[in-house]
Amino acid sequence: MTKKSLYFLLLNLGHFLDHLFMLIFATVAALALHREWGVSYGDLLNFATPGFIAFGIFSLPSGWLGDKWCRDGMMVVFFIGIGLASIATSYASSPFEVGLCLFIIGTFASIYHPVGLALVSIHWKNTGMRLAANGVWGNMGVGSAALLTGYMIDTTGWRMAFFIPGCFSVFCGIVYLLLRHQAIADSTFSRDNSNFAVDETRKSFFKSLKQHPLLIRIFLIVFVTTILINILFQSTSFSLPKIFDERIQGFAKNSLDWFHFDQLSGQADVATMIGVLAFIVFTIASFGQLIVGYSLDKYGPRAVFMFLAALQLVCFALMPGLQDEWAFIIALGFMLGAFGQIPINDFILSRIVSSEYRARIYGVQFVVGFTALAITLPFISVVYEGSGFDRLFQILAGIALLTIVVLYFFPKRLPDDVIE
Picture 1 (cartoon, rainbow, N blue to C red):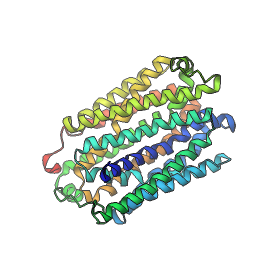
Picture 2: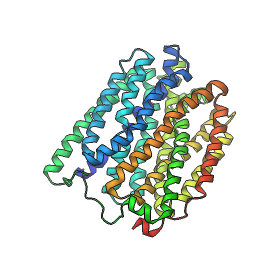
Picture 3: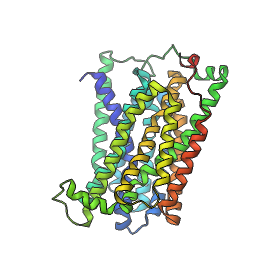
Picture 4: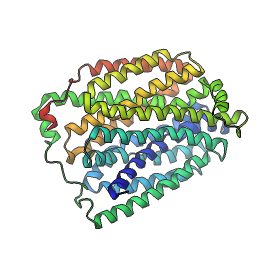
């Protein structure tokens, strides 16, 4: 493996770990802590909220530091910092301590998206496919959180679900640091502050914004849809373990035999199977994102975006009242839509924002997006405690419909003089 291949692998592993750490608690809360600590699922969501707020608001300073200081240095801070914070979470003994540790995890997690995505989009060609491949790794982190945590709950306990990935992240940070130092010594990468030469073939985003009013409309639509798709993504990805815990218990028990888990027995082991089924959904949805990446390069963002929003609208409308196999199938459908939408706005921004400003603009985008993620958790808590998941699905169907309406005003193709 070449140094550049290993470098790209580490960037992908960073995306994997970023989403893994942010969603370990989702499965822990759904399948373990509400029983072990006697705290309701809705109340536990409130302790996760500060972490997602940090995930959002610190994206902007993280992007600014990446541009002004060193993007690779920020990635080392990300790997080691989030790893140590996760290890600390494994020693928490109260909901308050868990919430504090999750806040620290969210702070370090805020580094990846503005910095890591800037590195991916600047250095390699075929931006749509690169971002989609990187997105698959992130989404596999989402799925693995349910899989690994469900297994840990049944075997070694929920604390190991934080401890083991934390150690692995620290190891990745050390490897990243050593690789970067070696690459600089070998002149594999440029030595400038932004790590890679500025792309002179594209106009400054801010200059283009003044010259092309159409960009203002594109920019506004990107940020409005960022809010909407992050609400949809957070509501589904965070809630899926609990949805499966309530809706597919029978399917999960039958699946223990189908998957030949003969060593597992008893009610507690259903947690492992729910994690496996959630992982299957997340994995299929993740690899579906590769098709989205190919489609973005070929058909453009508008058509792809509207199709995925329509898919979610249909699935959310069908989901209320479903149980077991049908609930599993329809959940797969809306997760395909939720995951598929994630790289689209990143793709759009990579085409209209010059490389020298990209990390900062990504930072602004993720402040908006991940703040929406944080707001979503109290929203889920209120809706779930008051009316259950059926009402949540109805509301999400309305949000998907609103997304389609907003996308109607998006241009069918990006102007050539903006892309250059």
